[in-house]
Each structure stands twice: as structure tokens, then as C-alpha cells.
Length: 311
Image 1: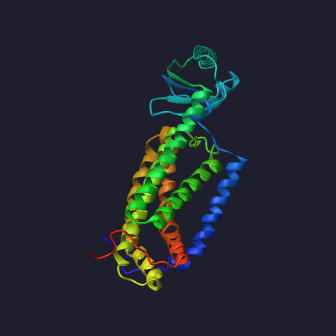
Image 2: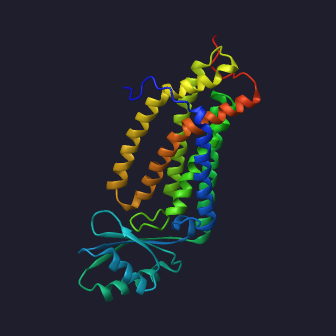
Image 3: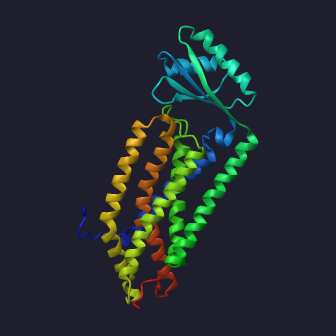
């Protein structure tokens, strides 16, 4: 199945426009990260999470007001479909003290609505710091593994361009989390371990899409002169365009359903993956391949992609 056939888009001819768009998005995100920072979840900042379940419906705004009056600051969002709520708070005291504080406030203000404290999870500041460092190491290890894999399969220029594209994708999504974190109550966009999983998913999707383009370049570049490389890169990206669009759209549809129907607990994860797929699709044709071409053009050396020469 092909949506686009016989396209002749000059991707490399438009690469400077793409670079400008990418630079604008990256700078906006980096400025937001410097000014606003990130809306960390308890995984990375420490604190407590409490799951509450009520027998009758209770407006989330009223519940927030009760907790605020009781001195329990944090975020509250619906959790599932059975009148349950997830309270995330920076409270770092004893969990029994927190339980008593919440129970007293709810018994006082919501007397006619029996409730149950389903669970309380607490993360200390030192554990949160360890989790943050572990997430950083996991991301670094993934990028190193991708660099080695693509470097072995193709060559260093292509591997480095692919890793730069991954950084591009992750930083743009991270910038979105900084810009929109805490803005929408239904989607607070907190940075926690699930978002690190989303970033690793984005990295995997981005490099997979990029490798498809690289493979087509390798097929077309056999015994061709350096003067023909720009044409080869454009032809290769045009021939993989249909596959790229179909794959991205079907994946985006699945993630969109997850975002709408799976509930607030994983909405941030779905948002991160959705944004990452959009940016990753863009970067595979407007960042990764053009950067590899730029490096090859400046090195003035013929490409020797592994597997590109006839036996």
C-alpha cells in the first residue's frame, strides 16, 4: 500500500528551513527549561502518593479544596473509573501522619460520602535523587548502544547524525513538558519514570524510522559518484515517504486512543509518545539524513556504507 507514489520532494534543498524550525523549537524548549524547569513527579522530587476511593461521586475541585484547607499541597487527578483519585503531595513526613491528616479532613468535610485510602506510597529525597540518576544513565546507555549499532551497520557519519536526531526529538518533547507542565489539570505532565520509558520509546522509534531511510540510501548509492549523492539522498527519502507516513499514522492512532481513553494515570506517557512520534517522523527526513549528507559533503570522501558494495 502506497499513499504517496512518485513524489519528488527536494528534502535536502529545504534542509536549511528545517534547521531553522528545529533550532526555534529547541531554543524555545531550552529557555523554558532554564526559566520554568520541569514539573517533577514524586519519583524524582520525593513525596507521597495517595489513592483514595469514594462510595459516591465527589467533584475533583471540592476534593482539592478540602486537601488545601487541611494543609496537604499537591495535585489531584482522577484515577480509573471507580470514583478513585490520585493525590500527589510533597509531604515527606511519616505516612501514618499523612493518613491521619487526610482522614480527618475528609471525615470533617465529606461526612456523607464514605471513603477508603487504598494505598500510600512514599519516596524519600535520597531515593528520588537515585532514581533521577538511574534514569539519566539508562538514557545515556540507550544512546550509546544506538550509536554503536548504527555505526557497525552503516558508518560513523550516519550513526552520529542518527544520535543527534534522537537528541533533537527528546529535547523538543522535554521542552514541551517544561512549557505545558502544570498548565492543564487533566494533564499535569509530570516528569516521572514512565516519561523516561516514553523517551526510550521515542529514541527507538526515531532510530528505526531513520534506519529505514539509511537502508534505502545504501541500496541506491552503489557505484555512484559523490556528485550524485544529493540526488540519491532525495530519491531515497521520497521512496520511503509512503512507508514512513503509514507507519507514523497507524502508531499515532493507537497512541491517540490510549491518550483519550486510558485515563489520567498514563496520559502524560501517551502525550510524550504522541509528540515524539510526530517529531521523530519529521527528524528522520529533515534532520538525520540531511546532517549525514552535510558531513559527507564537507568531508569530500566517497561513502562506503557496509553492504553497499557489490560482492
